[in-house]
Amino acid sequence: MYFTALLARTEDGWEASDTELDDVETLSDLADLAREASPDEDTVLVLIEQEDAWFGVVRVDGEEDPRVFVSNASVAARSSYGELLLTDELLGREPGEDDTDLDALDLDGTEDGDPEDAAGDEDGGTAEAVPNGPVGDSALLDDLGVSAKELLALEGDALSEIADALGASEILEAVR
Image (cartoon, rainbow, N blue to C red; front, side, top):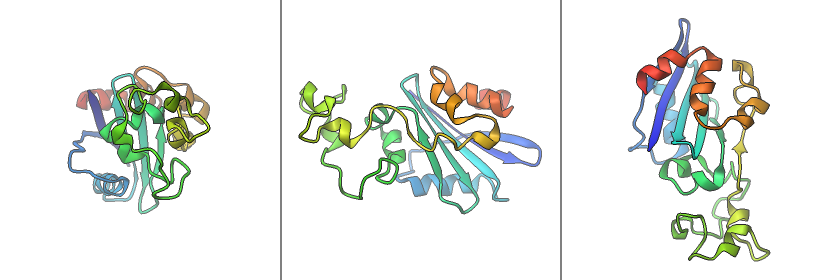
């Protein structure tokens, strides 16, 4: 089960809206959707959460490139929303460099049930293609009251904790 929301910073504080990502196919599409939520080019945060498995934050400031943080790349890689965020650039690889077809992975992250592939063996296993753990810009919320250290330590209902630090917990809960 996924939860997605947009938090747009305005002169009056944060405004939250529930959002559907069914028609979003790329990170660029997601950034465009976020920009539409703030015609004044203010900061917009896209918050994505898959139960307690992983969460992602995309920050869009006007026309700047989106900044992305994903709490657990290997888990997010197995979800459709996670695939939106896990670009080659974010994973530190050249476009098309991925040796592993993520669609061929079993639910546990192994290819064809082979646990050695998920462990990241010398032959270029899955762990090399998608790191196990956080990826991206952990400092993307520093100026908003959530340090990189705090973001990296979040577990469970991370989006609520982020919204609380932003002073936006009530409006986020209203769209939940």
